[in-house]
Image 1: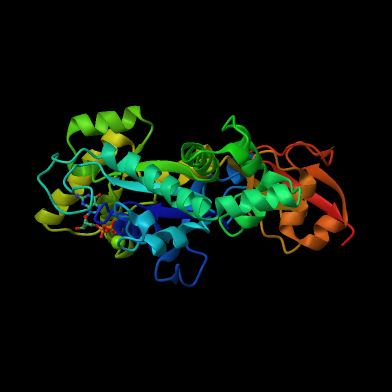
Image 2 (image 1 turned 135 degrees about the vertical axis):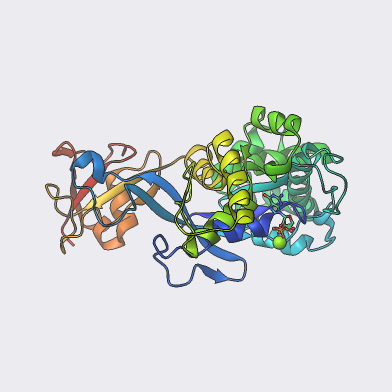
Length: 387
Ligand SMILES: Nc1nc2c(ncn2[C@@H]2O[C@H](COP(=O)(O)OP(=O)(O)O)[C@@H](O)[C@H]2O)c(=O)[nH]1
Ligand SMILES: [Mg+2]
């Protein structure tokens, strides 16, 4: 499953984001417990289900034509300045990140907390400082690891005539860098590895980090942020959001007060409310009208589809009815990387199916596709295997 780390300074709203995005919604969660460990939970991307265009709506696996596909969310320990030196929960923070495929950086866009997360007056802190500081901490953390071992690594590579990228990749095992990333990051320094100054090593660390971690900024607390901050965050490609509003809506939905699907740009009140509650919900509605929703679902979708480049494909066994062998319509929606081939998909479904792969059928077009054909978003695929 894709793993997304939620990071940010204390009080930015990470836990509120986490709770709202992973809250067990009876309708959506296909897991008995949405919280796996205290800080690990299951959230979902939301896509239009293929059943509508195939004329098999409702397929039974979507809600009103919306398909929710699980991804893992990690509420990473609070980040403070100089975390890379072990300050605060620094090391824990960085350990939690090792397993993440990408990062949502939750920022207090309202500027009402300083760089360490202490409360200050609304708009007093410039939240763009926080954006820079996460990147700097990540780079410095990796620089520290590299620096500690660099001379020894250079000697080993030279004495034993090792391939630099391969060797460095092996030495960094566990941090999630692949060999190509290391190779390209070395190349882009424009220097020979054995002639690196500290500055070059820092550039190398930065190159590695940029390739390793896609970061999406979630401009949180937008419900009370100054207009100018919101405008700047929008211009910088951040997602404007209010984790607090999303949490309120999901709680209200769980308790039967509203009808709301995560990612909707509106909701319906379905139970008697007092004036105060009504007023609170109308404030949320106005925010959603303005920004197209609370922004929480958008953040999860954007990181998976735009930043990580995933697409959705539907494996089936019957290419005419779009079912599995038991008759379930579009039983699975799988997230795969853009560029995935039918054979790679087969391996993802099951190693045996991959090993015994014979051919694949594009069920929408009813044609066989070659094994090196690139799957497209929304494809419905039948894999024929000798397994
Ligand atoms: N106004 C507003 N407050 C929020 C929002 N998200 C979180 N908060 C508040 O900010 C404080 C810190 O939130 P929390 O999720 O614990 O932050 P964390 O330390 O990053 O995990 C709490 O009082 C939250 O209620 C939001 O979207 N809008
Ligand atoms: Mg927290």
